[in-house]
Amino acid sequence: MNRRGFTLIEVLVAGALFLIVLSFFTYVLKNAAGYVRKLETKSGELYRTRSELERIKRLPFTVLSSASSGEAQIVPVAEDLYLVRVKTVYTLRSRYQ
Image (cartoon, rainbow, N blue to C red; front, side, top):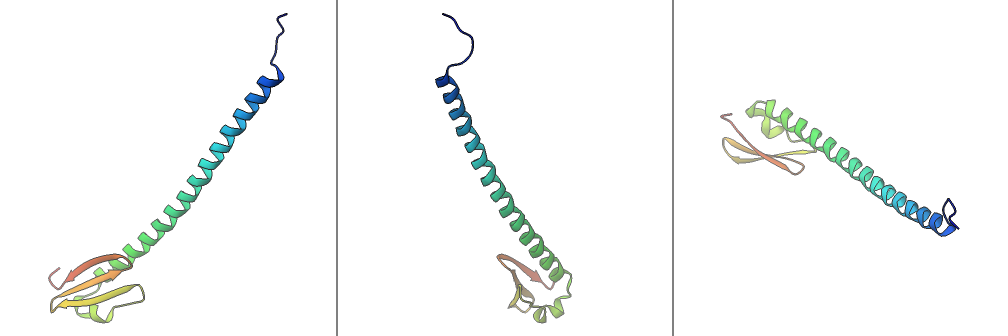
């Protein structure tokens, strides 16, 4: 008796495998979307930090001591050298740059 088609067990096993694979891909896509949101946030923070550093870089050296803002901290290291910190990015600004 050779019948064409699938048995009920074969259909149930195939359905279960399909659901397992579908749930795995859903999990992966959800995690990927979370990472994309984190990277967008970090990228925006980096852009704002670089913009602030560029603004400070364009300032004349003589006005640096009064240029500290909420995000930027400017600390004199020597007579001709300042340490500039914006969030977690540090750089040195020299009178001779």
